[in-house]
Length: 184
Image 1 (cartoon, rainbow, N blue to C red):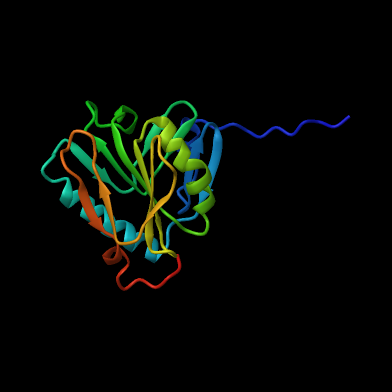
Image 2 (image 1 turned 135 degrees about the vertical axis):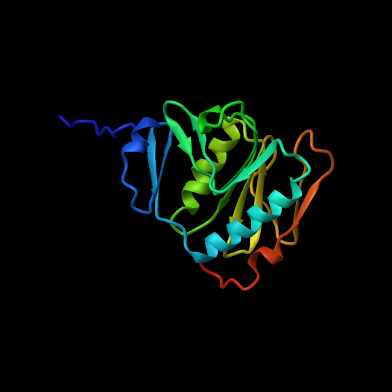
């Protein structure tokens, strides 16, 4: 008689016991996601995008931008998007954040399947209204919004209209990749 294979389920609290070894440890519905630390192109492009978002959001001090961010849905989900835009919480802890506006993942070979097949959908299901995946190879931003087709490619600019912030915020895409060789 064959024994069924069972995989260990992890919790948000389990992540605090993992080593600080340069890897990123996340848990999605109890499933452990492990990815290596990001490379230079990833960090440069992510940093440039975060700076642009922060500048555009300066008129709204209650909207915060971090890199990375943390989305917690205890006990079994803790994800760390490369950039997270959210409303200021009542308490200075990640588990108090509930008003997420945008989650951004910058692709790498080691995370592209997680980012595309699992995390994008998870963010949307958790209530993040918009998810961007920055594709270093294609040099574009793939946008997914709740209730719309996934991964709409934007190569020239991306326009984002967060609810309650007025008109669209526009980010030019090519400057994010300036001076960066293709690769991760």
